[in-house]
Image 1 (cartoon, one colour):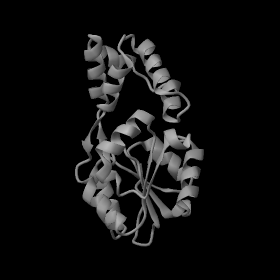
Image 2: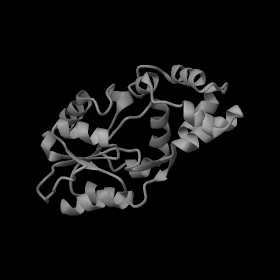
Image 3: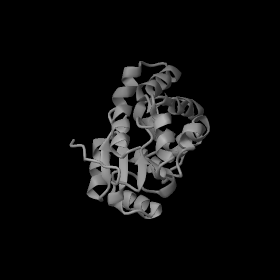
Image 4: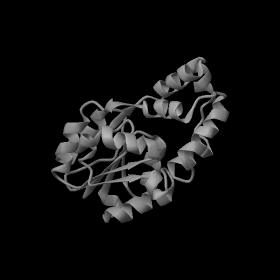
Length: 209
């Protein structure tokens, strides 16, 4: 994926995905914990897990936790409680991405910074408390389960752009998903595909931050 050229006059706002950009995540850890509760091999759970419509509906707030976990119980073929599902589900977060906190501090001192994440209510409740310090840099967080829209749908980017109040072409968006970056660029945002914190650091340097 091509990386756009940036200059100190390129942007009026920065927009960050959370997972694997600000907060590190590990889906395999989730599967391992679920498998432990169910008494089966993690590989069996991993093989059956898919980001289906129930997954997407949970991320837009269309279904509640109980409905989501009940669907997982059926799809994964495990008989574990909602509390056990929740235990594994929130274990996905393994800490801040290395080196991201000082970069967000620098960025927030220069211009407004925002977050835009596909996420669900239990994850929001967990990370909002556990990672309050690093997330406190954001002027506002646009979360799919709150706004009812998720990336890479065009309506999601349009909603966020309107809420920020800056032209799309003046917003630099950082995301680890190539599909989400393509969706953002299609709506006029400057998309930076993040494969490591170095990609964020490089872009901020080009922006003069």
